[in-house]
Image (cartoon, rainbow, N blue to C red; front, top):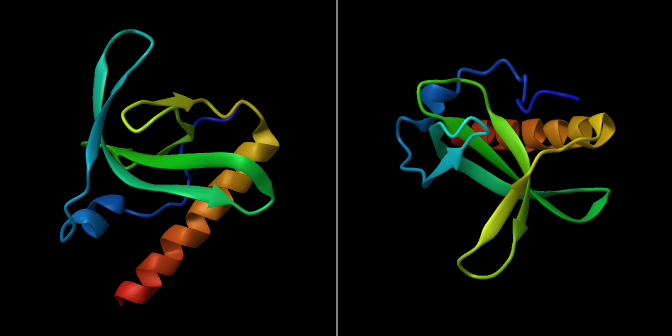
Length: 106
């Protein structure tokens, strides 16, 4: 199973300095809480019926990527991406989207 990080090698902190991102709190398996900025919710070409979310924990440069399921207006669930091939596709899609946004800002 892959770790849920993008592995893109970017220093994400400097990219958020001028942006005010929404945040959410993740509760981990050991009941610790992790405050994360929401980088975005996105679809992946070739994977139908699923959305994904990219999160950046405070004080960390590792992007976390999960499958995102909206249950209703106020509720959602985050699912770990278990399949390595799916995770690779999602990571590549995130890298492409993130790099495209960087290019537009320059």
